[in-house]
Image (cartoon, rainbow, N blue to C red; front, side, top):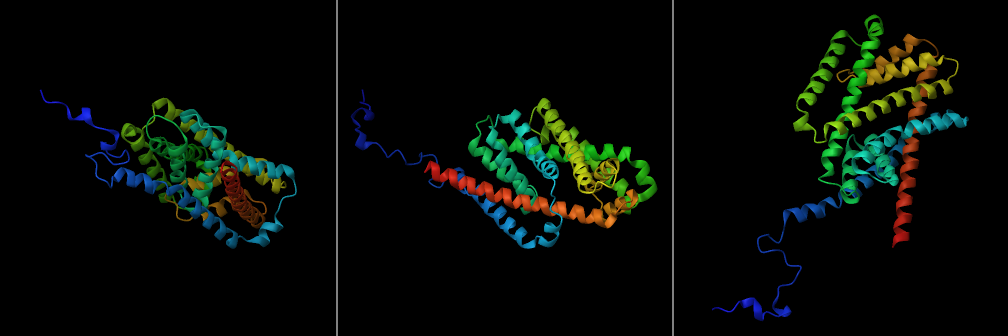
Length: 316
């Protein structure tokens, strides 16, 4: 009988443990992709930082200083409204992945990246964070993709509901665009919605129960954002009745969500004229709020960067 050759092997005769298996090439594409993906998060962070610094350069500081609110209630409403998006996302991913409380910070970075740098770059950042920090079954890409798609779907659903409610106003005042644009927008939203509904088993990966939950959270977030925007406007310009601000906030969400409207700013100006009141002052106030939100983006992102650096120094 032939003696097994492994019986006389010594540890010195064994190959080094760090050599790749014989059936895999030394330059494994999977390993190369993993090494490359390690730079995705830092690259996006640097990009967001560059966008934030550019926004500092572009800020209209004169308007920003002139409209700084003095009421703590205004800042409270603005802060709650600002966090409504990340908190809604946290509720979603808390249910899907059981992310911890400090998972709100990458979600805030996701929002800032989408608004300062490029749309959906925040989803890429959050996907990279989740892949490295969250233990789950399967890939996080499917869930992040589904949540982003359902966010757009919730916007379309809310738009169609509000369009049905506000149709007499659109039919009478036109809001700065013609019927062809309105019907085209309705058609695009219906086609996209029906396509996702009928092809959901191929497009979406989450279970049906989770999809319904995610859609409902997005709907609630849109309603909260619309109501708080009206409250904020009412606090800054109390001369106009709150009901008018609520209708205007709803109309603004409706106008900005219609997919094939090329002149949304003109349409919103038409909505301002419809509700009357100090149109120029209202436009200046809305511009100032946009500047406040940009400034908050910059301050919050810089603070989170400093917090990350402090944690790394403490853990070093």
